[in-house]
Image (cartoon, rainbow, N blue to C red; front, top):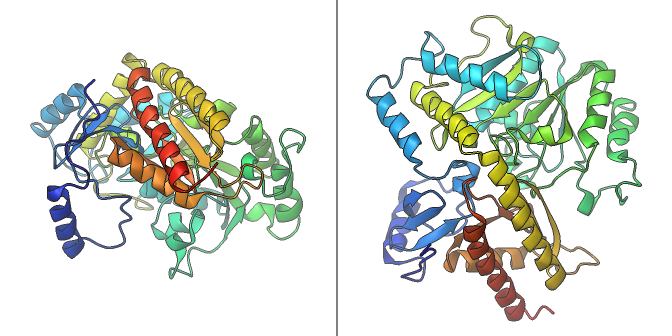
Length: 447
């Protein structure tokens, strides 16, 4: 528990030198948050090249759900690479992909036959979902959500709608995508309040979209994140997805739950949509599925993946090393009871953040499920004006004092540590974030 430990004010000299080299040879499209140059990691702690240690509230961008370098993961990798590294699951067969697919069909919601398509990333899992929906339904349109992030490849990007920069200069994209407002209760686009609103945001889709200009029989699916990630860690209210499912069923529209960030235990259940007791037709998964190894999976009703040979494929998808790691991830989450830990520690963090909300004028909203938690900062609690600069300064000061944390949306601090974190270590990180809030408020003369 001697962490964090800041030996050299970051970025240190070694980090600065590597950042300069990076700028010379790596694409400038990568959006680095701050000059953290990671050298090694263990469980919930990361070290930079200058020897500083940090509490990881990012999980390597919500990937390292079972912690960094879990001994069972390292052992599984060593065993697998000595046996088989690659032989294209697209063209032949191997045990690891089959066993992983069997496990994924068990842990995903829905008591019906399922099949799995393997790719290499979240965007590829979304692309596979798009193609499966289009191929099976023969319907050309998709309804997505404002604030959504589904990836940056052209199909996924067409449904992404969280920041203009992602779409700038890439028009035209895949046609047939219509975006509707997400149930962001803290900033309701309809200026209503839950529950008196009656979930009008669902009624709006039928009244103003399906009944006015989008023929329902041309819509193949609703694509959504059960908890918006990049959009600001936005959690829909109770019953939202149940009502959306009724609307979808009315018009025979499929529902696709993008669980790339919210799944694999992140929200305290295997998949976040389970909090709303809804069974999606399709789930996309990646990030936390394989503890840092490239893997994406599209899990769906079996009939949605009964398509012609060659209709979709991926040379590296379901790579045996990644698949073997993913199997171990599932076993670790199950055997170490990490869903329970995510719920318990998440509730503890939420309690403390709500105390921040009571104590500090800049903390406007706190929301989350499990260890997917957002703290939205504002300039004024009455107007709810986003405090983008304050959120940035809190992020940077927290990092410089030993907590690797980033933002989401316009001004939300996103908290997503490994599911293995203890309440004690979380408290250390929260103490640092709280001190950063105090410091930034004083510097900016916020009362």
